[in-house]
Image 1 (cartoon, rainbow, N blue to C red):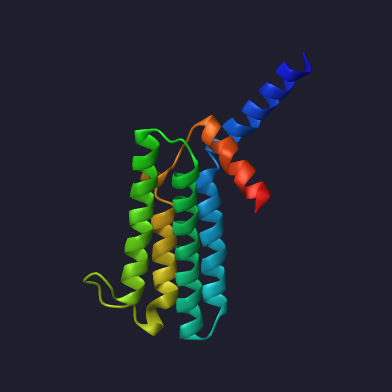
Image 2: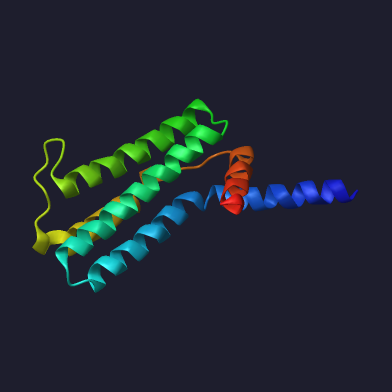
Length: 140
């Protein structure tokens, strides 16, 4: 009986987490934007943004490499990751972009945050995958 209760509790937690993965990225980037706006140094702003983009890309890579994902989940993550990489390339003037000018870094951080909050960027993954991610995060 206790096993059944535990199973339902874990599933409830996991189902709640499926909707909050994208929210975790949004929260992370919101904190990034606040840090960018608080900084007076353009090099530091650029470093903060690059670090944030890199962390999110690394998190997606870890999810992809350690989770048993469906094709749809992989496609969702890849789309999200490509968007983040594009923002990082734009920031740094790579892949055909002109680099963001120092005086535009605050606006760029706001624009990037808008990108992160777009409804079509929602990433949902299955219960088993969420449990795996939770275990990975607990072990880190």
